[in-house]
Length: 424
Ligand code: IMP
Image (cartoon, rainbow, N blue to C red; front, side, top):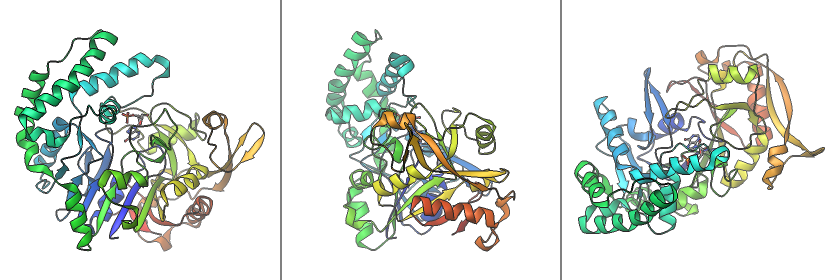
């Protein structure tokens, strides 16, 4: 530390929440920098499972200030419900802060998300239908409503009129739906959300920089992942924000020189939800085993995740895009019963061997993985407490992965629990 970014290197669901929670033990602040409640971060503490969507993973550490940064899109109803769920379960949420510059997701964004997906038919992206894309679109069109706008009723109503007059035209004229009444919606948001949200609103830039200036450890928590990045992912099968390291700078208001460590979280295999290319995707028993043992179903949506072998071509690319200083490998234990384990080291595309992720997406669709196949360790890793006790075949797998990814591995997770990890 003091400034560390934790981000996903694949297509999300790598288990970022667990390591953010772990690293938060030494951080005075954890800042979410992009995305919204499309995320689902599961933390398991003393056998109790917490599924977080919006509140930064550091919330379970009573000393840590969880900050929702300016780059996040916030559904105020969801934020308040999540805070209530946490406080009902005995978690102290009094330190949670939300940037006044974060944009709001309101019910029409969710409706538009679902309608757009239906409109796309077979070409649909498989979004989470949480309104993420329409909220970021409004932000880019300068029609967005920021959290701070709620503080001035007149401004809030005016902005809602402007934003909804645009959204209502799309709802009624394109999708043949009923319009939403801006004053009814304003009444509802101000009555049901403002009292709970008002005490959380903060100048997050000042909070973050004051902590950094005081030499405190600040953790920047990414949601989604590198290959869901709107610029660097497999467009259009991506989310609407930048989960890459640059997104931490814009979404939290810091310059790149502040960052000391950039930890890329990678699952020991890969999963993806929603549509889009996936060179190492498995349609066989190995894939079913990964899904069953790894419980690969969406935390929020319940959707079955698409499984595949870990892809070092993607990891090398993620290392370039994010300036990764290290990798943290999750869910290694899910591979415990496999006779052999595989790492994709390159692709065959139209008869040619390729070791760099092709920039032309149609080539990614055609990519056939080239695998390094290694013997499995056939040992229950969930009880391993020391790296010296790791079976040699598990070490060989990790070492080959680090060598192929060209990034050292610093942490390895061997089970869902908070204590099930090893320093590598
Ligand atoms: P959206 O972010 O809801 O617009 O969805 C766009 C794409 O990103 C879809 O393929 C989603 O399945 C995927 N996605 C969004 N959030 C997550 C996540 O937290 N984990 C994994 N995939 C996600």
